Length: 208
Ligand SMILES: N[C@@H](CCC(=O)N[C@@H](CS)C(=O)NCC(=O)O)C(=O)O
Image 1 (cartoon, rainbow, N blue to C red):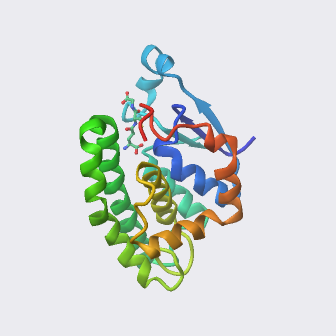
Image 2: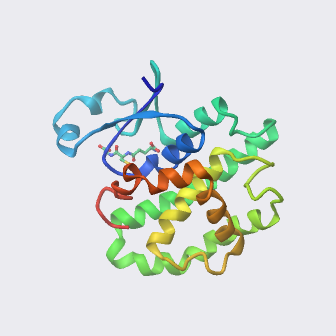
């Protein structure tokens, strides 16, 4: 039995970075897929601390909040920096990624038809912040000399933005190199090539 279980809808959504991280860390996990019908008619929602999915189980230990899962795995698998300051920087960058993810999610679910073009036009103003950080990084990672959960988060958000706007990284060589670097890590490459990854839509409403 794998120690980890993800309970979520049939989307990449808020578990995209988590699955990439688990793959890269050589971990196995079980997926429990919840249909919209089960969610709206069943009792699962009532059992979720914030009334939402995803839910993550590490054996008997149950968590909610997707960034909490990343932090938990970061602590367990050595992807949370090598001291308190590195950990704080990793938190900071992950929060920055979360800000961008939230803007993306808002556009996808609330404003896709009328807001997509303006979103893409404004995107360089967000990407340039991460570009500046990675351009200065000697390791090619956001913090220190090894991969952290914030790198998986940023990577996954960039992959989704490349679907939204295929040339969005063209003026950002460090971000482009970062995506290539993570995409070519063997376990990430194998996961991105898998049906498990490819068969899931990015978002629940089919927009991307
Ligand atoms: N901050 C939460 C957000 C969770 C969230 O927005 N869940 C959505 C799906 S991605 C959900 O459960 N929607 C159904 C509902 O609210 O009833 C996280 O990162 O896990």
